[in-house]
Length: 92
Image (tube, rainbow, N blue to C red; front, side, top):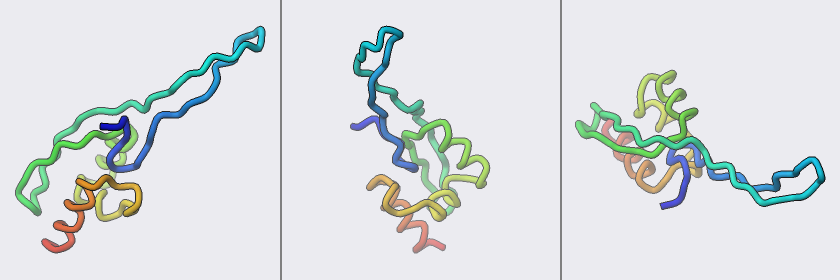
């Protein structure tokens, strides 16, 4: 499973760490991913998703995973969240 946020699609960044003497060593910055469980009352089920901490804060601000899924862009969602989103649209 890739190190990727399922809601926003954030992936690791790569680049060079440059020392004072201008030597370059390759580095990788991984996103801060957390596994979080949400209850979807509209579908009467629980969902465990891997999210970045920024996405968790956004979900809390928007009032739950259901609202965040309906507002999210389709191309950034994972396959699992796309299926849940389509079931949410049918339920509502």
